[in-house]
Image (cartoon, rainbow, N blue to C red; front, top):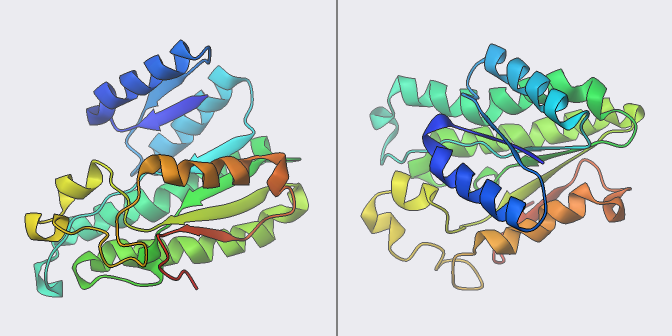
Amino acid sequence: MAISFLPEEQADADDTAEVIAGDGGTCHLLPADARTLEANRELAERAVDVLGGLDVLICNAAYQMTYDSIEEFPSEQIERTFETNVFSPFWLVQALAKDLEDGGSVIITTSVQAYQPSEHLLDYAATKAALNNLVVNLASDLGPRGIRVNAVAPGPIWTPLIPATMAPDKVSGFGATTPLGRAGHPVEVAAAYVFLASDEASYVSGTVVGVTGGKAVF
C-alpha cells in the first residue's frame, strides 16, 4: 500500500503506517503537495516505483473552507480548492492510466455536496459536481483499456476536516438533517471503497456510490 498525504499530515500518516505494519502489511508514505502537475507526476512515478506497479488508485485529497456569501470567498481559496479537488485527480489518472490497464480500478471521492450543495461551500460543492462528471467520462474513456472508474460520495462524515474548516455554529448539529439523524464515521464509508476496488465490483464502472445517511445522490 502507498499513501500520499500533505506534509502537515505527517503525524496522522505515521500513525496509519504503524497500524498497517502492526497488522502485517506494508505501507509506503509519499508526502506531496497535490496542487501542481509536477507534484502529481512525481507522486505517480514514486508510487509505481515503490510498489512495482499499481492496481488501485484512490483520489481522496480535498480542501474546503466555509464562507457565508460569495463576496467573502478569497480568490486564492477558490484556486486552491479546484487545484486540490479536481486538478490533482485528473493529473494522477492521466499519469497512471498506462499502469492501471487490464484490471485496474480508480476510485474518486466526491460528495453529497455535488447533489445538495450548501451555500457556504460554493467552491467545494462545485468541485465535487465536476468530479462526478469526470468519473463518468473517465469510465467511458478508460473502459476499453480494462480500467474501471467509480466514485464514493460521502454525506456528512466526522473527520478532522469538519472542525478545522467549519464555523463552530455549523459544527454543532453536523449531520442532524440526514434521514438517519446523525453524521457518519469514516469506518462506515470504508466498505464502499473496498467493494469498488474488489473483484465483486468487476462489472461496476461510471457509478457513484452514496454513503450519505439517507440523503439523495441523484
